Length: 402
Image (tube, rainbow, N blue to C red; front, side):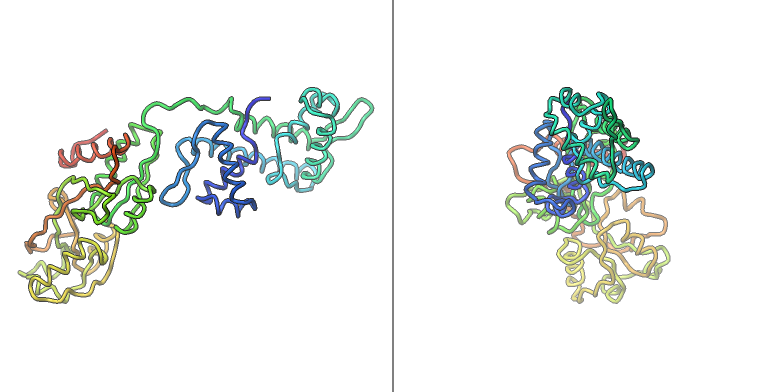
């Protein structure tokens, strides 16, 4: 008998992937969590590959897991289609998906091929009572008879023949002979990057574009979030690094920062904003509406210091936004002034609807870089990603990587 993933393993693998965790999958499947874990572990042992890993949004498939998940999902769709076909044949809906096992389908297929349970038992190396029990069980799941007894043996119904065809379809998906388990060439694995508000997103997008073209088996994940949220994820190993304004130094001893380049805090407003029509100072802008990053971020701290330096109380913020592009759009479509950080290249190529407010801000330079876990040696994937970012920064971000 050829090696194959069990139908139970297929159901569990799909459920864990959809639920993003073992606990929720156990509730979906009405199984205990240890049973779900053991089922996945048995599939991993059979395949010789890790199928799931801890990630930002819970348990997520590895590159190998994605490949196997596609086959498991396809197998379950084959079962659903067979159920629909059996309904059309006999006007009775079967309940195959939760209970179907290979030994049921093997028994049906062998009896159709050899004409009797005794001959099927010889072919399968099973006791005849076991064959009879398998036929009885699958008949109950189908809620209709699958064979008629004749003088010369058992005659298969159309429903039985559909089940035999289903077995062949499932073997195409779940037989290990049809699953490519050879090591893949190039970089294989996962890179999850935390994206702090406003800084470095364009670099990540360009680096991800290169990695996607160069390493098709590499799984790439970009996770936006706050500093506290992403540092916790980094410390737990749910992400591999985060990019944005550096704290210099990071408050966590197990983390370290890698400098990439400098940006400048800059005031921007829509082209038609009244602040562009006259010379203004920071004090003049105290009563304006503002778009600034949330409390606890370097941008918000600088915002407070900026007004305190001229003896003014920092104005209340109108809107807090974590997405750079969304912040620019709100500024363009409102009378708000934004305090954002830009590289020299980006400030020179602002969207036509935006304009820099003509105020030179003191001590506006701020470092942008990566924050990573402090280890003896980083992964090959993270080293390549870091090198790509450094290359982009040294070229001013303008040289194509492809």
